[in-house]
Image 1: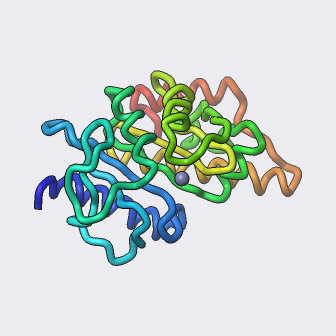
Image 2: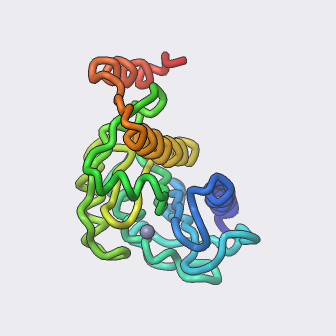
Length: 212
Ligand SMILES: [Zn+2]
């Protein structure tokens, strides 16, 4: 199998996302860039992830053109490939339709409630544009900026990225958690995001790899 290494990492990540409830059915998609060949492994379109094998993960070029694999790549490949092309520091991208992130996109802001969540703010908000379009891809690139890790897409879901799959998955997991904690705290009427100064200090510690 060609590109076995990146295909296996993408498969493991999507199965983990299914196990965690971040992804249901065929929704959500994950991509990973291979440096040496300048290709991207991405989950295929419209196929259930349960029981999927690594050879079924699609391979595309950096423009999202389908190169290998039995099933066509995710229809949302324009978003993944656009972010990977725009951000040299990004190797992995995760897009989910997580319930709480989708709700948070409507509320217009997402702030951390616990220290680990601070790594992923500020979380940009992208207005609704048609899924799979070049327009949504451009808006996500713009909202992520030079160093963003997560954005919410209105009436759709979220898009996260990282220097490797572990980092991109952490962004997706903690962004959904951030949205979920904020949601329940708001429902209970006790919502208190972390103070701005604490967010800034935590981000510094995380960037310096000194967070516990
Ligand atoms: Zn989507």
